[in-house]
Structure formats: structure tokens, C-alpha cells
Length: 344
Ligand code: PHE
Image (cartoon, rainbow, N blue to C red):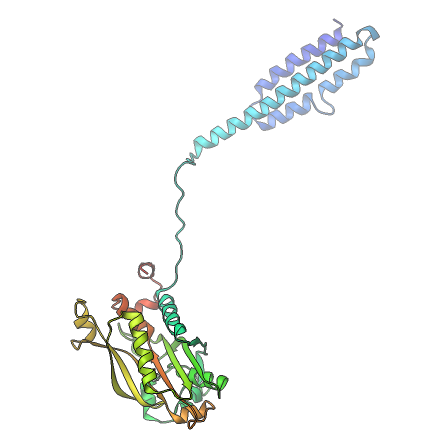
């Protein structure tokens, strides 16, 4: 064998020996450029082709190709082995068992107040009431005056509120001003709507009173709407929400914007261990104020009180929720305590 060809074989032996000694990726790369690179030893050896007598060129060429393939595949194997080594090392350092069950991602849920609101909408929707959204920041005129409470009317004492720095602009104390907005949008046509939303009152916070709470107002106006319609609607509602055998009791009451005015109680199951506490021993529980819309209010809303009549009611869904789920502190609703919220 000619010298040049023998040298190729020696080059292979040397290269393979060095490859074995490469301990990491950068050593491997250096080896590759040293032997297989553009200016590497293999290329250099190939350059000697011209010195080789024609009779031996073929043998040289064959040996060159064999060595080249041998080094390239040895290099590939070494790179693969290096990767494998690294993977094993990292698995040992950070053991990961992919067969373990995944960690559950805690799913969110609707707030209990939202759930009860939706239940209430659904019941009234079945009776033909649409949901009407109304503003929380009101003017004195709509919150009081148009509801038949002129300035200094003593009934205003029932609804002490938060006033903004803009005179006459306040946080609504009840959803009743929404009645005016509904009427002005729909008059002179008949309408049935429920008006949900947050209300605010300046109150000492206690287990039963918050400075913010939701109300759901109801309003129905049309040619022959009577007190019997009001009673029937409320009874149907109470039985859907609290159970088919609930009895409803109506007491007379007073609100400036309804005439006559009533308050509505439902009987509470006597076998409920909380019955005595909830009903203060009477067996009855107040759930809402209501009445026939006052003619002055109808007029303020754009209706002719000689042609139409209407009923209205207002209830506090937080109170209703407290009854339904035996919640003993109204402050839980807006505290954002997950231990409370997670129970519903
Ligand atoms: N707005 C009254 C309140 O907040 C409730 C009510 C609504 C009464 C509609 C009669 C008619 O106490």
C-alpha cells in the first residue's frame, strides 16, 4: 500500500482514539472541525491525491471514502451518546415521573349571589318578565322625587345613602328608581320587567346589614293589572324558589311609591331546626316589599293612570340566599373568602 493510503488508515485510528477522549459537546465540535471540517485533516489528506501514481489512485480513493464514512458515522454516534448521557444526568438530577396523575387545576365557579340572581331571573322569565339593567349612580330626582318623595319627605329617613361630591348625585338606595327608567322607555306600552343590581345605604355594618347589597325590583304595567296579579305572581315565585307548599302572607305596609303597599311573608317549614331563629318564633319570614304603583309615579314614568295600572315589588336576594343556605352573616357575601365561596 502506498504511503499516502497507509497514512489515511493511520489518520482514522488517531481520529477514533481522540474521539473516544471527547468528554462533552464542545470537545466533540472541536474534534469535528479538526478532522471533518473545511480545513480539517481529512480534506488535507485528500489533497495528496495528485501525488499518487495513477495506478494507485483508485485504491487511495476507496480508502479515503471508507475512512470518511467511518469517521462521520463515529462522530454521529458520539454526538448521540453525548445527548443520551446528558438526558440521563438530568433525569437523575430532577427525577420526573410522567406516570404520576396530574395536579388538579382548581376550577373557578360562580359567586353564590350570581347563582341565586340567575335562579330568580329564570323564574320571572317564565312569567314573561325581562331583565332590565339600571344605573347604580343615580340622581336625587330619580331615587326619591319621581318616586313621590319630595325633599324633606320623612320617608327618606328609611334610605340614608352616600352622596357624591356632585350635588344631587348619589348611590341609589334601592332599585326602585329603575322603575322610572323602565317606564320612560316603554310608556305607553305594557311592560313586565325585573331590575337587578347593587344598592347602597349608609348603615352600621352588622351580621344583617351591609352598606352594599343587591335588590331585585319587579314591575308590571298594563291595562288591568290588579293586586290579585301581584299576589299570584309573588306566590308563584315563592313556591318555585322555596318549595311547592310555601304559604304566602300579605301584610299592609307603607311606601311612598305604592298605594296600597304591602309586605310579603312566607311560612317557614316547622321541621327546620332554624325555623324559630329565622322567624323570631312567628313561623313567618319577610321576603319583600310591594304594592300597586302610585298614580303619581305612573304619571312621572309617562303613563296615564286612568288607562293603566301596575304593581311593583322589591326584594333583597342576599336575605333570600341567607335563608336558602342558612348563612348567618351577610358580610360573607363581599368578603371574598374562598372558604365561604367554595361551598356553593
Ligand atoms: N324599594 C323598596 C325598599 O327598598 C322596596 C319596594 C319596591 C317596595 C317596590 C314597594 C315596591 O325597601
